[in-house]
Length: 229
Ligand code: CA
Image (cartoon, rainbow, N blue to C red; front, side, top):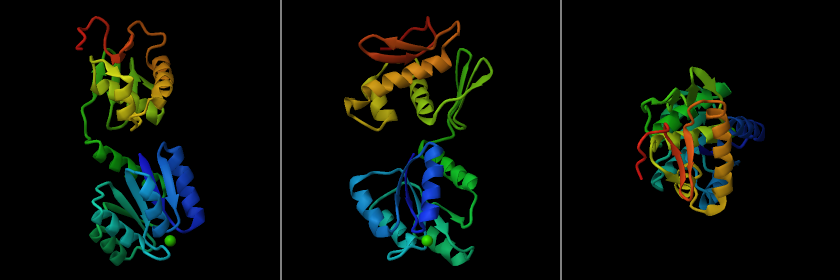
């Protein structure tokens, strides 16, 4: 998910940036509320991690401002003390959750994953197709009982194909749903991701599940099924 991290302590900000980036999130970072507001004028994000104690306008004020702007995306506050007042103020300003410093990065990642699940309307049913099992809640994939490692984007692509099981999806549909883009810039990228996904899901299997429909797009289906146009 695309995140904005606002934290004035550079060391912590850099740590959050690297850790969340390596967890598969796209991360923008700012050192102050004012900087964050400027960033938000040209970028859209899907979730926020805000330190409470910032120079100038506090994280709580930023949170309140975001909600006043009509932002409904999840907001996690980082509170410096375990003081109840900070937490209450944070939640009162419209934050969804808070973490008290110092916190474990694993805990932060778990909270953000929960945000992501909520944003995507989880829990969702497990998808079974032939011997392929996709769990959208845990973001895991198995084929023939063996776990398959996918990158986050690969998973989102497979998940999109699975949600449209037995239907042809075009590159434009995939671009809009998985890359949040309406441009054709992603066409080649999509082809590369499909090739990688195919290698991981279908290579060396008797039943192929990812199909290319020439001139149209792609399809996740068991061969022999009637294809809905
Ligand atoms: Ca701070």
